[in-house]
Length: 440
Ligand SMILES: *[C@@H]1O[C@H](CO)[C@@H](O)[C@H](O)[C@H]1NC(C)=O
Ligand SMILES: *[C@@H]1O[C@H](CO)[C@@H](O)[C@H](O)[C@H]1NC(C)=O
Ligand SMILES: *[C@@H]1O[C@H](CO)[C@@H](O)[C@H](O)[C@H]1NC(C)=O
Ligand SMILES: *[C@@H]1O[C@H](CO)[C@@H](O)[C@H](O)[C@H]1NC(C)=O
Image 1 (cartoon, rainbow, N blue to C red):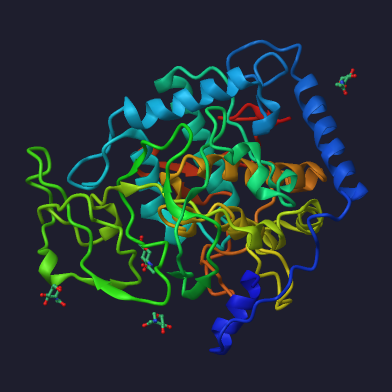
Image 2 (spheres, rainbow, N blue to C red):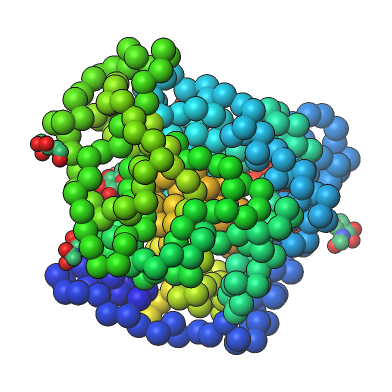
């Protein structure tokens, strides 16, 4: 079931058909892919070398470049330092959001979750995908460094290393040097996902329950609306999550009564069993910003792992322009039903909260997934100097008929409470303007 299959099925009004991935995890690593990785490394070196003789805070050269490493290339000590900084974000740092506008935010990680929730409909399946997420990951990296004492760079997860044996990945082994384990297994059905005009049924994976092992087992996801795990073959109608009454949020505006705004969605009966919340201060314009505390779920998924191989990356990197790159990573580059959808697959392979395209930053794994996507983007950019400042596509998600506004260098992208607005053209070069980082 590749995304394009789903999309074309959806458009045709048919039910989805599962198609086998064309490439296998056991395929050898293509030489063209290796050669692209090498030319990226020389591009980085050349770019930095040109500025090595210069001094100054704003100059990006070999002396101050932040080198982002793959998770397993970091030493255990480095991984623990990263983990501690992430824990600090949700354990020790309060939300900086206006409680009246974001009633659900409690900690700094929540601010990033809220930022993504608010603009989700504008930054996916369109020409803003890569630059928006690039800046978002960078902002998170800065918060880890400036607010939580982290000295290193943001790690990435090279999923091609795990495509053939996901359940043995050191990223998810549940140890204190991992990003946590799988969700606890419990029998469950597909995930019903309605977003961007699509109605998808995502296949169940190997976990589905709460994350109980590793460093983030105490993490509470405070916002987001979607139920990402369905019990087998049953749907129920659930009231929307209620907002917890505290002295702080008593005066939240605008107010709406929960009795008048129910939603219907597939719901996991284990949700909302621990606490009941007083119906106070619900906001209506974006219900996902209300306080909805629950455990972090994962559901490692072997189906999606199969389309995260080096061969699939090569296919992606062979895109001839920025528009095609986005369409390829999102799986809608033409009607070919067997094409991979590496961006959705990169989330769905982790599953649970990652099956919710709006609330996915509530899992710290989001930032390793999107660092990998940013890495693929910069590798693609580095293959041809003309690509560095190339933009493409429109601003409308899944714009099959080209109805949106063409993406322009002067577009302003919104980062909400974590940064405000930034011009797109300043988000294109990882070694200029705000940025000074490269991938190892
Ligand atoms: C990096 O670039 C400099 C200058 O172009 C060159 O002298 C050096 O050998 C390069 N280093 C590597 C590791 O490629
Ligand atoms: C998921 O959440 C978004 C808002 O965050 C909402 O627009 C969408 O309808 C939800 N989908 C489902 C299936 O609940
Ligand atoms: C659950 O909902 C889905 C989509 O809304 C529907 O296709 C399915 O038949 C429902 N299942 C049950 C058991 O009601
Ligand atoms: C919302 O759900 C409650 C409890 O199931 C029900 O009493 C109420 O009538 C529903 N409201 C609407 C508008 O559907």
